[in-house]
Length: 377
Image (cartoon, rainbow, N blue to C red):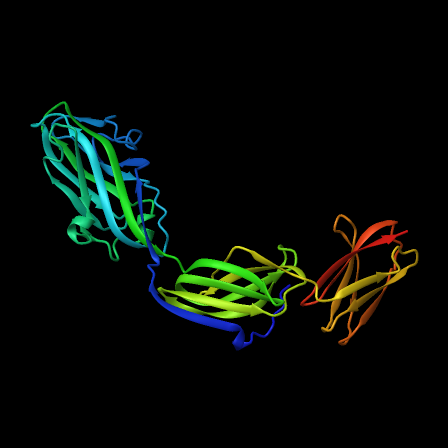
């Protein structure tokens, strides 16, 4: 259940500091294929030895004019949907059997939806020695051999099952030709942004008020913050709403004053909501506030079916919820009482027989909490 209160404009203090903060983060992920599909070739590569550069030799053996054709796929990328791809690097490591055995080598990067870019189109991918070839878009202005990053290499495409390396043709010139891959990998570098980068969230108790402070290093599509409040640290309700700043790359400091903390411990957390109604929570903070009232429960010990709760306070105690709990925290009964400002006495009638023992009497309203023991004979 949520209870909302009107937020007074004077309770918010916004301070803008002209400090630039980068809100994007670069990540590089390198994956290897998990499958090879023959596409009409005379021989097929496996994939079991391609996950590490260890000269393990994943080979095909071809006779004259025979070739290998197929797809290395199943790279298993999981790039965030809102990421911006900034670089792709393809690494091919392998070995030809002999210098004069190769007839043709054509290898392409395949986006899995009809667009392919040529990586290798010559006879000499490797030169009869252990060799590694890297093809990087960083080295060619965001284009890897004709395939641009914008539009053609999106997270959706890269995460697809058909994205990978196409062996268009590896063709032998002589009988007994071997071609080996030791390592095949694709590295994706991408940028992601954090909708709201929260630096800190703190709470202090000053003169009976809860002073809440938080700051953000950057904000993207930030609509508002909800300040949620709790008596026990588990059951939160929405207490106040504070507007966000939409988009910002500067540090912003917020301050909110809650003039109605609970007596005892008050727990707070922030719920940040963006313009798409997506949200995330901050850590929980708390303050302790001393009692600003006196509570008396009598008779105590209790041997009848009713008792009184007397509240001595200068504050308003409207809509008091009174509950009786056993020592396990289980509720015995609930009673609502309403009053005006001044000394206040609540008479509580126990409508059912309660076993003898020690119980807690707990009272709450939208500002205060008390919890006293009572002995029932």
